[in-house]
Image (cartoon, rainbow, N blue to C red; front, side, top):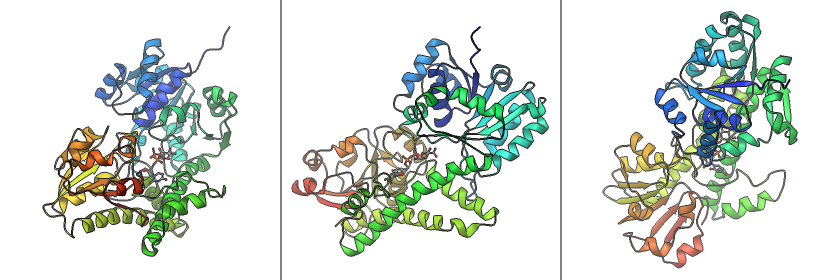
Length: 442
Ligand code: UGA
């Protein structure tokens, strides 16, 4: 008799959960995705992604068609169905502090627990402050009818938006925090195809697994702010940070990835994760250990101010009544995510200083318009820069990298551009008569 395949529930169907659910079905498991948002469940059930993620809609459609993938709002149904529950809800920054807001994690655990009547495995994937998994374990043991039969693991997710499918199916490592042999066995079964490819599988205690995630994001943020700090020094000394970064990158102890200078990091992860990590270190009495992350955050914020200063300088010292074209709204290309978007932060600040700002983005316009109704939005790049006295490139979509300086020159009022992402070739734009300025370069 063939062994029964594990049945998987995925709680939370945002970027992480929807990707995880669809990819687990792609691997052949029967999957039930759960979200309290009925509209999201309806949309996913109909094969429509409520957000932009390249390649994911195809995986979703394929697995809805095979009947391996379903969605629900009902915790009782999820508990009756699944052998293993993955918690994939968001952990945003609290409105009034730097700490992580755990209300979605807590409510998922509270809602699920009463229905866990038989031995079950619960594996968290959400990014949480160290110590959360142990607390949840105790809570489940105390409140689930199955008691100690509910076993907990924490397996942080390292996927990047824009590469979610690839990163889920081919992660560079799988980390599992647990002290339960059953949880490890289940996770090895879920990860069988990755293990067969030789992808490293690391088993740790719960605390270490929680820390792996936030320390990885802290390191990545630090690397970006390091090169942006060098950009500040380059600006003051006339050096070129692009040549500097390239020259550093050949030392394979340093490497070239995440060494891209520019407007800096944003999004739903890096900024809030370093702040929540600092808040947690403070609670643990080791605040000085992470005080450098305050500097990482400050360097990152200064790049936004610097971009605004360069633009202001180009148009004669004041934004009042000036026309500005902004290219980019998403926090990075290949995403429609505008959470803590550096591009929109710059655009809204310039608008509040009295400029007439028009924004274009290939995918994030709808989200940007909903959050920032006072800005103007255009449906093409040319429309956004029409009559602009300065153009700001703030998210490095391929469409902008490939922009033709001659074509843009025909519609702008003044051929001035601030390349906030070091995405363009300065010589090429200057040859076509543009005043070209970038971060960290002469
Ligand atoms: C990040 C991590 O890269 C993932 O490994 C992690 O799983 C994820 O957070 C998460 O915690 O869920 P993501 O937020 O999707 O992924 O975006 P990144 O590709 O890391 O980019 C973050 C920001 O850094 C973007 O605003 C990007 O423009 C900026 N960046 C990136 C730079 O300014 N310079 C660089 O060289 C690289």
